[in-house]
Image 1: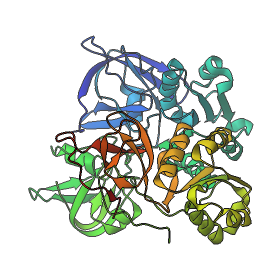
Image 2: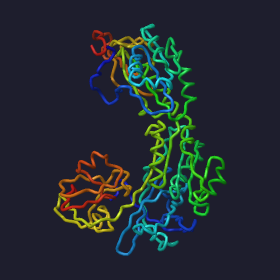
Image 3: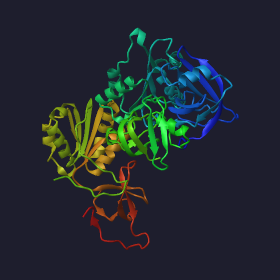
Image 4: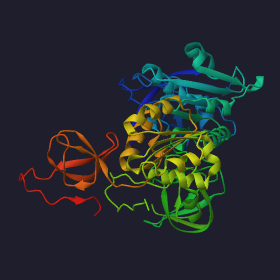
Length: 321
Length: 202
């Protein structure tokens, strides 16, 4: 189970096609009660009953954190993914009952900042929508730089621009517009914190440039959910019971443990939070570490694994579970 | 030699490092007394850095010992002031005008490091990114937990609070907010039963 996160029984009350790639889903509690509060940047894990498979995908909450009536998320259709986003797009209809986790925030605003500088790419805009509403309500100082492929695919760009005018800057790839990151970083007043959410390449570029410009790592925040990737099937043995569990080609180790009824800890399911960190008792083979939680040294050492995204190739793997 | 190895203590007690040059667009160094040695060591290791450094220096009882050597290291700006209070408006102005990409280096006594850090944090700079190096006196800024008055440069424990006159024992319990260690009345149970005063770390 996810440590510290209880479940919410919700009903889908609205599904809106935002553009060709993105749908927005609105959830309200099935018992009519209030949603829990959250802070901008939080995500929820959506449980999808897809035939025999239970999919658990994290999505950033984009609604106003003060709105206790509902949660909303936006889902970008990923044709080549493992199927969670396709399930949301094709199968989820208003009136459906679903289960959400309580919100968890791994990308919160540092409210000691004098200014919040946000950089979003594509669907990476979603956590910023909630953060901007939070800051707007408290007179916070923010500036958003949002990179989109085309105006038509720029989810919420028009609404943001209309409401926040010169605090929002939109860049269109098809018009050859690009964020002048070096100039942007150089002009920021002391006490600015930098937030980036988008594709991996963008996150790496922003973090690398900020470091080269002398930004302290404490002032640079990013969120990147890694979806578990497919790989060769393997067997994992539980040290406590000696049970052997098969991890399928399109399954993560965490999903295989859950399918076998093992109550393993998790939070983000994307290699970011560290909650599922598991000790390796013994192994004969190679790890395929995909998280960004363990340090390079820990990965080289081979005595820990993050079952939510990382895999194993070899003869045997025994974990402390 | 101006270095002192502080013994391991409680979590609350600040620990200090050794200044090293970091990538940055501008560099602000604040030091007092023997803290100048830390700046001079850094300047010797990275002479090119000094062209983008603003040094704020308070000699305290070292007089002119380090001033000419600091000037010879050719920082972009060098301010030498009689006290931290006198230097503080300049420090605050430098922080208010600064942009991200600034690196902050603090060296010298614990009082100077703590006070300059207060201003840097108030300016929104993450405290974990401030470099510090202790040099010189181990005297402390101490806040009396009873009257809240702060006594500067306390080098003995117990000592008499400069504000309320109680006999205070100097603890390692530190407040970043006050930039001061905690002083607690040592003879509250038996007034007048005060152990002999000893120098800190002696």
